[in-house]
Length: 118
Image (tube, rainbow, N blue to C red; front, side):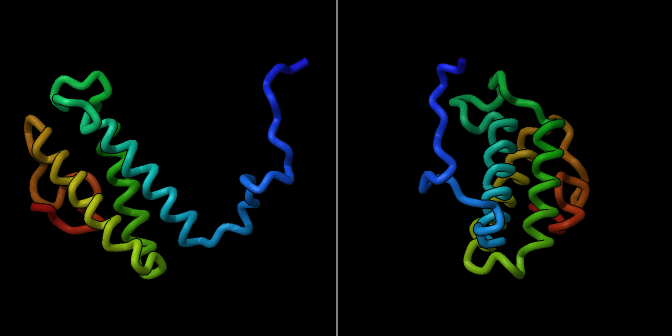
């Protein structure tokens, strides 16, 4: 017998995926990628350079995935597009600053989708 309380299926907190508007699904996915990339850059810690969560290889993958998602879905995001693009650009700049050997312009994470970030 499980001692973990189960939430009833008819709870108001449970939504069917088909009932969630696409812009919300895309925005949630983008925010998850943005947050995960920030963690991998160590931005949640007082000193990102010494963060135990810092992993630039993982951050590169997450930023590239975020760039692809935001770029491909920008026309559907409406008022959400600007803040997501701004967050993406901030992550790209933070990645460039964190890199011991910065990528050439246009070669950084996600830059094949967004263009060079300065």
